[in-house]
Image 1: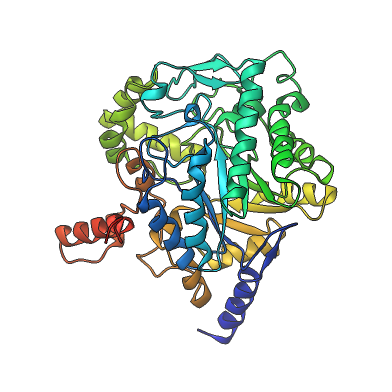
Image 2: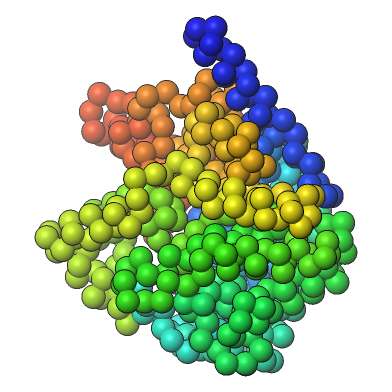
Length: 463
């Protein structure tokens, strides 16, 4: 490493590994593990041993703070089965155990409080005959997942479910909570002008569309006080028209800036924003990368009975000509930037919220895995820290790598293939990119890949 490279590396390390102080929470560096889920738990929403192993390995790898998997506040709000929930006090002991395992490594833990709304992929037998609660009666336009516009009583009930979820997170000794207000889930369905078609106090103007989540924020503060960390994951821009150009685009950046100002709530609201983009999941911008067609065909079949458009989608994915066109379209709608795809949005949000309350921090997600990209975003004022998902699946020790170099060695980087995303529909979450594994033959590579994916089950429950 030349003297100039050494100086730049030291500058990057100084930016990335400086502590970050929120209003009521301090973390040791600027690297957050983003919300990575995985079906590791019991069908009834109780946490499993594999989840403990899963969360601890990222804490061991050096991240400052882990944002939990998508954690449903009610069984009606599941996206997939076998995700640990926070719908009842009987879940508190498990989450206390998660916090204890993570805290051993000087790592903080935030629970992501979530509700699917209509965007429910495989909600389980409890939900099979129910339409997804939403701001609208219109089905999700990608999969055709059915929706039901919530009544005022249902809105009040869900607000309270979020508040009680936060209370349980605090009772479990966790360090804070994050509201999942992005990527097409229930809060997005209220916030987005491209989805919310209500004509009551929860629809129409930005203030009305933000009423639901503002009520959640205030209900959480009622339960946990002002000294418990609360952040919100937001869509900077919805890009709701990514698949069908005639669909309403949804919120633009100016809309989101207004929403963020509302949620600061005079200093009594959220402590930080976690910036993403894209009003569906998956979306070309979230997680940004490719769409592995072979894996789509292999694992999307579980969705066929879920929505009115899933068989149509599957026919496209299975067709050798139409699937290639869809992949081209996906990449085109994503754009050429993957690492740091949301940086410009994040900078605009950071500048806006700092003008209102300088104590409010901003995190940015979007494929980060290189020190120059991460440190550059922090130095530029685009964010105070970054949230990383797939690159940490590929390299659990990415923070340790970034202390030594600019990023993973050639051939060991996350390829943004999104095979982890598709496999999560039916298989353990992990890195399924065969090219990243050593071996002289296909069988050797495959065996090493499976061993790494299955490592989350070790140590076993009883040993």
